[in-house]
Length: 224
Image 1 (cartoon, one colour):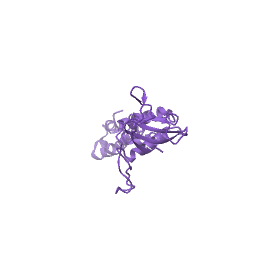
Image 2: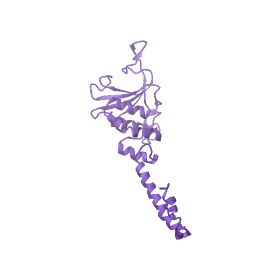
Image 3: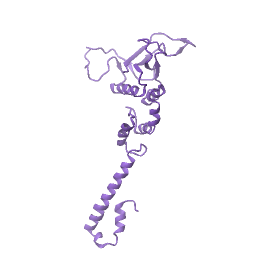
Image 4: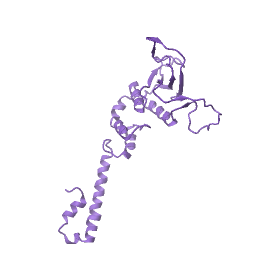
């Protein structure tokens, strides 16, 4: 068969006099054959729409819904395609710390670390099912501000009070991420963005082995 129905029908009816006239071509090629080509193309696109490697960019969101893979704020179409193709592999790690670590790296925070209650004695204590996500200094763009309630800012305008360098949409994305990939019985208390210094309790060694406990500057955002 030829590349399309218009070409094939044209060759098939090449010897039929009435089909070669103006109205004959409009009927056979411009209507029947062209309509058949449109149906064939629609069927082809519908068949490929579910394949992440060959679908149109517009179909990625629908595939992501069916595979329960969210598109992150910094995802390019190519990056999102790659994650959709690894959907089963990603979901196999749901409910594990490696799964949370991998998701944070995909989100753009590859240096972030997960700390559980037994690893970091941080109040409230004790609570075996709680933890925190720590973002070391230099691995993010979050900083603190002196913004306070009543200083003239518009309350409820979507801004985050006390921090800048991260948007509310990004914070909400982080919250959805940890909720999806953590184990069901676990609670993440806070996202802790270290700005200066070394945070005590994170395992960082200072001066060849001594634990560094000097005060640090941190920006803290509720995780759940």
